Image (cartoon, rainbow, N blue to C red; front, side):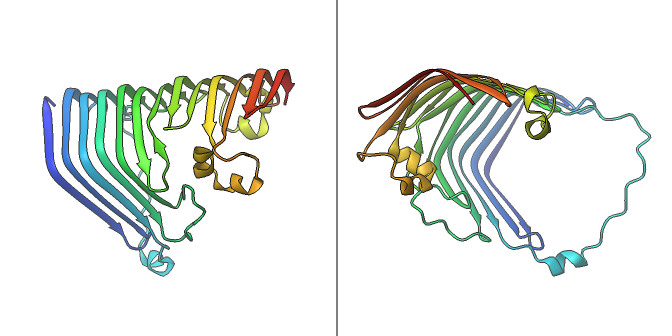
Length: 278
């Protein structure tokens, strides 16, 4: 197919699954796609740019109707596929930009947390924006450059900046040049994990290799309490308005980890350790 550009304006989409208890609503003021190549025979979707502007996405979950689900007829098993296997889909996006997006997720099967922090079952995100370059998805491999991601959540948590070089394969995850910033906190890190398969995390600990370089962690208590509200009950951070700073290097296997050159500071209290075995 030879398609150069597609633009959509004032797009509305609604999907309701009454038996499954799902309701999805989407509105976009503008969506623009610029293509380099479309090859349906090889399942290749190559976009130069994908732009999403000023939209709202809402997902509501309700208790599934088990009685109604039981009345839905089950489809017959498809016949064996004797044709040539379709190639795994490949998606390439040179530039992905989204701005002015509002995201709402409500799980009505869960009680509101009401703990003063982020409630995973009741999320409301405003002013979501992101910029991603060189996104490549091929079968079970993903790589991208996250240049910018920012949002404000109704709990009061604000992400000013999240960026990283990301690569995921069936045998490893790499996060390079990770930067995470809020108005009061900063985290910079590099992370690497190698494993033969995901089952190794539970039954082959020595085959899982981890490496973490954490040169800067500056975590303000306000962000910590919003992310993990239960920490308030521990009464660990005193005085109020405290900031936890740390730096360390972690390496080894899941069954034999070492922390090296570790330093943790809270107020006037500092802990240093050259090597810590976990």
